[in-house]
Length: 453
Length: 117
Image (cartoon, rainbow over all chains, first blue to last red; front, side, top):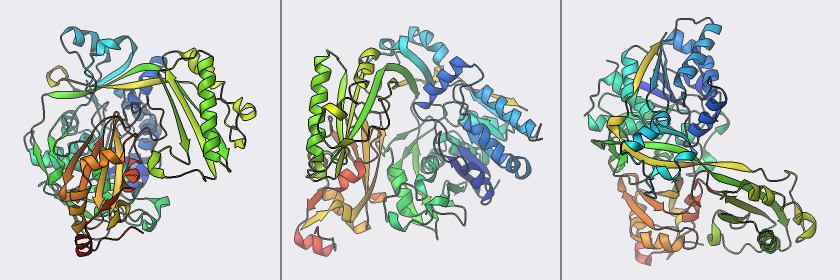
């Protein structure tokens, strides 16, 4: 058994720094590279792509990432774990194989493909069998929006990834695995943690939570003493050096920018936190109030003390459905009286929409530069040098949203004065793909691992 | 003595559906007790009155010198539905740090809290 296993994070979301995976395999020794591509809305985007072309539906950035790290996989045995498969893990694996062949590494990859999280084709059967997939926030049954569903995926845990690694995979591609499982699974595989080693499993999950957002734990987006954080242009993405007992060190490669400190890690730990006593995952419930952090030298934080408890018998399901249309338009009003002018423009626009008989589910106006994000807490903003009126509507009727989009430009000539900033043109009308969180019995979700060589 | 949270804590926020979370972390371990005592659930609900539609929950993490607040109904529906600039609740963190708390002078001196200027 390895004494220390190094898992590095190379991607915090689909759209993250394209060069980070390469820097992570070249910057120092690592055993695993973990790449997280899936946010809540990503699955529905991928589903739409798959509908247009059945060979798509995965995070295509991953193919380029694989190309950039291929040598490390082939020559140094670095293993890759990614939820890049989206709604089409087999197609993702085929694309990766094609890249390996192109680079003369035919046969060097043993790809574990994890499937079974995709519930879209089974939805009606599941609902008929008494799984209402009720919305966790509103309690409404999924049948309410069933005809508008685009994708439905269960968040699956570490087991199929551990299985794939056990079968000798050096690349594991999953669909909707939890972000944290991508880090915990290789530790479980290396250290032989059983399904009831709650504390170690919880430690693996916490390690995953710390590094799943990439550089957000190593100096990126860090408020604490932010001016002093060095060389963010060359920010080092994080890695964990884990031991069998569940303790681990968060660090980054030498000669990189950013910082790993108790403060940068603490900020990431509280990010998107709910009830810290029960951080629920498919494998284990981690108690985040048990985490101990300690400085372990420059850019090193030792994490220990983590306690875990048995998970529930449910999996979370992420359903994406069509929820109408929206558009947001902006205009900039300038001193003197910038805020007052923007407020008058807002009033005029509302009156015009009303006269046109347009009805929306929601109209929201914000005053960027004054109160948009901090509201009344921002204090008196009457002397702001410029204020952007940001006016958004949403509703079920596409035509109404499109008509709204034509009402912004006229204000430049027929509204309040000192207005500019309309170079972007008419607001774009977008279809809203909304997210429906639900739970389902674990027993109905069967994952499967295929090894492709 | 009046104390600004921004002088004694740092923070990060994020989202879960229509709920924003704000984790507030004391800059010095000894200042955690100040957060715990003065930055109450009610005080935070009052602070954000008119900005959020739902209630506020508070959790304590003395291990991280931190409090975690959940602000329900803070994101205009959240995710892709939201029309807000801050649809993912990323900057509720610094909005909370605008809070000014009133700490008894003796306690403030003992803990060497910086006074609001």
